[in-house]
Image 1 (spheres, one colour):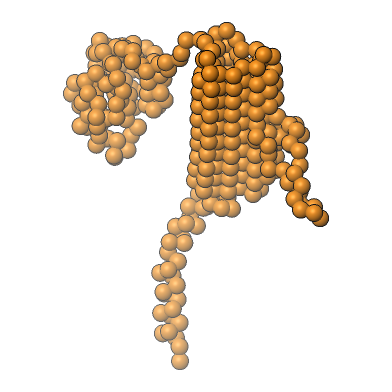
Image 2 (cartoon, rainbow, N blue to C red; image 1 turned 60 degrees about the vertical axis):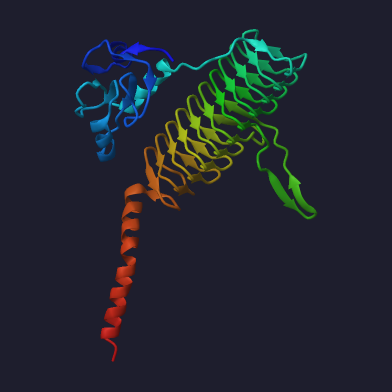
Amino acid sequence: MASLTTGELAARVGAQLDGPDDVVIRGLAPLERAGPSDLSFCRGGARWERRLAATRAGAVFVRDLPVPEGVVALRVRDPRLAWAVAAAAIVPLDWPEPGLHATASVHATARVDPTATIGPYAVIDANAVVGPRTWIMAAAYVGREVHIGADCRLMPHAVVMERCWLGDRVWLKPGAVIGADGFGHVKGPDGVVRVPQVGVTVLEDDVEVGANACVDRAALDETRIGQGTRLDNLVQIAHGVTVGAQCLIAAFAGVAGGARLGNGVVMAGRTAVVDGIEVGDNAVFAGLASAARDVPEGAKLGGSPARPYKRWLREMAALAELPEIVRTVHRMTRANSP
């Protein structure tokens, strides 16, 4: 871990410093476990405020709440964002030295930049390209004619199938699969016939794909994930989908074939988009929402089928009152019976 003073932290994230600027921060910890050399943050709300009142942290990112005596307040508009920036500086990623492990398999026609790192039992297939400072970790697979840009990280058992393209600073978490065949099958008189999936998958710069998540190759053209988009663990992106830039798609979410997501879309856990529909920029899906028709820009949705979030909340509140309404109707019916 690196050591930074409170003054250096404030300068790094543009925080207003409330306290001395020479307190040395050496670690990261939650409010309830932080000590005098640790940095923490407070998001706000009753539960967080109780923890803040009792913290022993050396410094805390906080918006406008009071902090205990002896704790340095680093006042920012978004404490969690400031924490993310500071945490990356205090605990930098330990990137390995370049090199090719003796057990790795690199095809003679592959082009691996000399500054790249290829780990144990990794496989780089024919005519693949691995860019500068990229780290291919143990047992990862890079298929034939794959292009991987600079500063990427493929974690253990990540897979990139043939002819797919990864930009710079792309991270694939353990078990992520890029470019597997899409679910293309047609029923014929003699049984199910497989539809060849001859397209590719493209991940633009700064994309991250979570553990055991899948981004399928297109049937004919491409499946594309836009710049800076983050996919959580166990997300499924089907063939021919386009996901815009800076989207956040949480665990167990699924986007069916041919759908189009705009920029800045947020999909919470276990949400879904039906095949072929379009989702506008900055739309937000609450947990379990499932959209079966086009979604306008900036919409906030809930429920299945998805509908405007506030309407869905009203419906859920009314549904909770339904048992009492039924009981009231039964009482009135019995009272009016001859």
